[in-house]
Image (cartoon, rainbow, N blue to C red):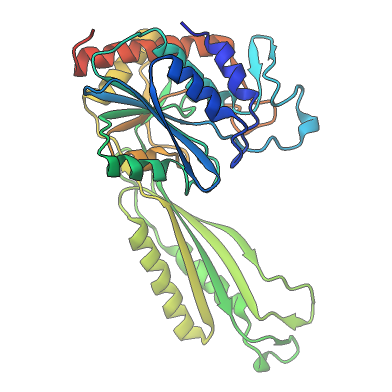
Amino acid sequence: MLDVTTLTQALITRPSVTPADAGAMDTVETILTDLGFTCTRLAFGEIENLYARRGTASPNLCFAGHTDVVPVGVRTLWKYDPFGAEIHDGQVIGRGAVDMKGAIAAWIAAVSRFPDQAGSLSFLITGDEEGVATDGTVRVVDWLKQTGEVIDHCIVGEPSSSTQLGDMIKVGRRGSINATFTVTGKQGHVAYPQRALNPLPVLVDLLAELKARTLDDGYASFPPSNLEITTIDTGNTATNVIPQAARARVNIRFNPTHTGVALSQWFDTVARDMAERSGAAIEVQSSISGEAFLTEAGPFVDLIADVIQTQFGLDTDRSTTGGTSDARFIRNLCPVVEFGLVGQTMHQINECVAVADLDALTDAYSALIEAYFSKFGSAS
């Protein structure tokens, strides 16, 4: 059996800030090969990905995660080397400790306790979750479909727990769409506004119209959708010039009441109507990061909740909160649930994970694997 803390440290010492891999995927591949997995490396662009499977029978239980991490920020603010993986006061310190190298290590350590299983175990590991996510899991999912590879259920090891291990799992996520509105008017002198067309009042009116709409009142298991203005820019450094153009970006986090396409069409309609009324030219560029999804209550979700109740004595919160994750791509293959470490320090200076939590998560993952094949297959 493999030691989860040692594995976590080995992964943290690989400075795999997106898109760099820095040997992190090699580390995972070597360990999984030794555990009897057939590993397939999938490189897309600058990104290293890995799909590994042990067994050929169904069901196939997959663990999905990412080895890439966000930048460390101001390095001098770290108490210890962010890639040193030192242990202090029972905590492993380092970038990626909870998001999410610790969970990858915990699942590998759990798998090492099972020399065989009734069906198949697989790993889908990407190096492009913290970046733009165009050459990571979404490309691997396409490859799996093309090759006819079937995954029956998936656990994503994101740090889903809120304040204590197991208190929350993620059974869905809201969708996300970004849009940039560029209003082009006519530059001129502020003393002669009749000779110009100021794009800023047009942009303000457009944004006010967007904000005035109540998108919805919520959806089963989801909060209401929300639109947020994230930036307004003109680039105007003069005090006596009406600018030529102004831009704003907005983001909507939306529940299953909406689709990304429908919201994009709404943006286009509002912009077109505002352009007709104002005489300004308005361009819209929309980008859909992911659609909303929900893994419905059923045997798989119940199994995870039951394991958490047994291991931690908690009635886990089946949540849809938070940002996006790669579960949004995997849900096109199979039911998917996120269950991982406590995310209190993710993306922060001095990110860390308790050694006790690593051990406890490994035990929980082991119990989950055993319960899964007992329920969905025949244990061997």
